[in-house]
Length: 430
Length: 167
Ligand SMILES: Cc1ncc(COP(=O)(O)O)c(C=O)c1O
Image (cartoon, rainbow over all chains, first blue to last red; front, side, top):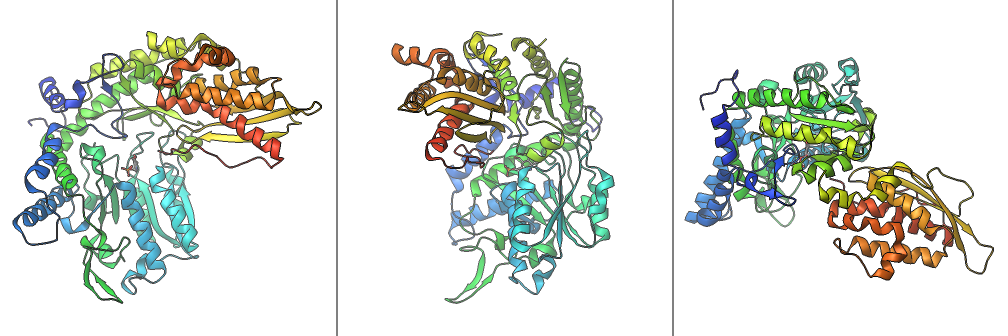
């Protein structure tokens, strides 16, 4: 497309994008047109992604890395080409990208590999990943449970301590808390963009603090990769996790990026078929990464679908898409901010944030807010969005969240805001 | 606002959600239960106060505190009125009938059951929204659990029970 980073998508381009998403044509709740503002939970899929998955099953289906027949070769090629496309999309080499079920599994993969290293598996190469009672893992208060609970569990298994960076009242990571990163820190795990506040984390500062003490950095890139140009090498993180389904791809597939030396040093987690070299009745040697971490029959059709999604986004151009979404986010924030009795959680201006906007309505529980909007065909998320500690920190039990996707229009945001503005009245709040 | 919403949020529900009967924990209880709905973080702590002077124990009153959506708050409030002074067996029957209503996909039950449920029959519409059924049931689950504790004299459960759907 001809857009540059400064421009947003033209009306014609946006209409063309919307036409690519068959699901957007359906109605909900007695004929209301669907207004899908829940892309942060999962994205809708363009037809090319659905077609790619279907085409794989129609023409190329076979198990990969097993057998030498023609189909097996084609399927293996498709699977590895998909890896190249997705890896290139985030600026890394394809042998540094491990397929997983989702981002949650990718984060757990690192945590369990560290656990295994801590009991000597993969030694001596894995020593850098081992943790014990003298070590600390650092997370932040802004994390999704997926980037918190696996570290709590790793600490419980190994005796390491869990520390955290705090967040400010507006949901930004508080850089004055960077001093929890010390010589004892083995790994810092943080989100790139919060799925609640939309805040983009100060990754550069956190990476610098981690580097200064020799700690590793894991980035939860679930919410950034679908919306911003992300170059993991430039960010200089050691690990990153993200999911296909949040970036127009299929469910059932995610990825772990790991720096090559680290993946090479990592002991396996899931073991069994496909991830081995020589197996005897008493011992096994393991394949090099990424295969070492891909035990069992793999999600090949999903990898092909994800490749189509990454290609679709690359074709739109991530800088152009980010500029387009920044424009929509600014409008969404303006509209929500100016409704009486509605408070935004997190930054209320568009700088350094993505288009996930959580809010609370005075005197009306988020579940009830969501229900009223749902009756108008508007899909938003309500609850704690898998981030209970962050809600607690911001002084609320739960919230409602509207989040934009590539197909979101200004008219949809206005429609949403008009209905949101009437919610308090429905519940008799003055 | 559209009809579906006025059907779901009957005036009875809106009124009870605003003015919650039985709200505020009272001591001297025979049993207590704490329930959470992990999907949305709604929680309730409910106490049962028994009158054991007669041949069969009567549910003298219920007291509770909690936070949650209008459906969960109104349901606990309506429950408080319904079970006041009934026998433990009747309270259990009410809870069972309410559960049946929630599984009815929005159809009313027999008129006898409807009558028995009183204001709680206003929750019929909730059964059409699977995500909200848990909200309406939260207080009733706490009631049954608190009664079970009261009758076995077991210490109250501090842990979350039953519902799990952490997404
Ligand atoms: C910031 C963040 N991290 C992690 C996850 C977990 O992703 P998944 O459920 O695809 O594993 C999500 C989404 O649910 C998220 O928004």
